[in-house]
Every structure is written in structure tokens, then in C-alpha cells.
Length: 217
Image 1 (tube, rainbow, N blue to C red):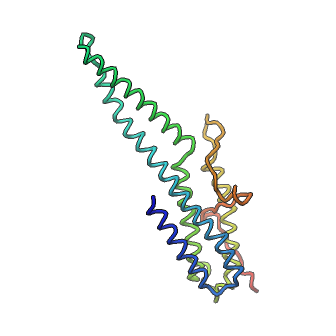
Image 2: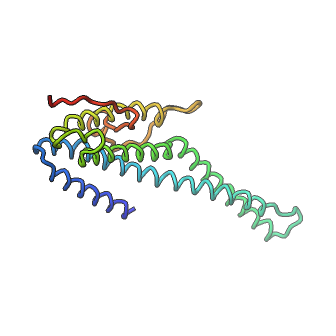
Image 3: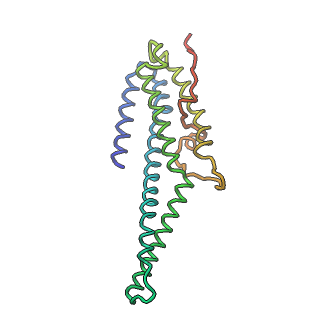
């Protein structure tokens, strides 16, 4: 986990240096850091957290599912077995029972919080946002027609805001949507930009991006 944190800090420092080197007014640079870089850093951190929970819970479920049948088979002692066999069988049965509860709790937690969906969602959005930023920095893709970063800034800002708006709908319909028979979900979202800034600020996917006309004419 410390490796992920150090990499995230290193990447944020490198991107901050790239932004500072752009020929842009200081206000535009501050917008890039607060609106684009901050959201990118949050998305990647959220993806790491969701991935950790997803894989940890899945590992417990898989390993527990393998051990429970084996323990149950060991607990089947003959009716005329010795006292030691009966006591050992009782201990094994209780271990299998506790492991079964653990697996059930992990499966319910995974289903409720949808850590796998969250991990894939945040990773996809983070990579989309990162790609958009690098295309702007290198003036490639939709930014190749601009002579300077200042000329392309309005288009970049508009495309990022379009991603924000599209992602909200995707999150609500694909990640936070209730499944049949499931009660209202109350996901753990402390620190999410939507809560910190007083409104939805997640980033969407490339399918929601529309071409924005030049505004510098």
C-alpha cells in the first residue's frame, strides 16, 4: 500500500511540474490543479482502496469456500468413536461454522458495497481523465489544431466538464443502482469530491464526450 501511495505522490508532483511549465496564466494553472489534477488523484486513490477491499473479500470467500467442505468432512466422526474423536469433531464443526459465518459476511459486504464495480469504475474514469490531460499537454488528438495551450484551454475545460456530467449518470445507474431485492445502498463515500464540494464532481467516460467548437474566434 505504501508503494501505491508513493507512486501517487510522485505522479502528482510530476503532473504539477508539467502544469507549472505550461504557457498559461496562473489562474488557469490553478484551475488545472484544483479541477483536473485533484479529481485525477482522488479517482486513482479511490480505485486503489476499492481494489484492496474487492480482492481481500474475494480471497476470503474463495479460500473459505474451499475449506468449509473439507472441515465438514473431517467433523463426521463415527457414532461409536472415542471421546477424543468426538471432541475433535466438535471443535472442527465449530471452526467450520465460524468460517461459514465469515464467508457469508464477506459475501454480503461485497454485494452491498460493490467494491468490484467501484474499482473498475474509478480505474476507468481515472485513466480516461489522465488520457485527456496528456492529450492536452502534448496538443494531440482533439487539441492538435491549436497553436498554444492557451488556445486549447477552453476546449479542454469544456470536455472535462462534459466528462463530469456524464460520469454522474453512469455512477448512479451502473454502480450505485440497487439490484433487484436489494435495500437502499448507503455506500461509504467519505472524502468523495461530490461531498467535499457540495455537488457531484466525478468524471465520466469517453462515450459521453462531444466535440466542443473553438471558442477563441
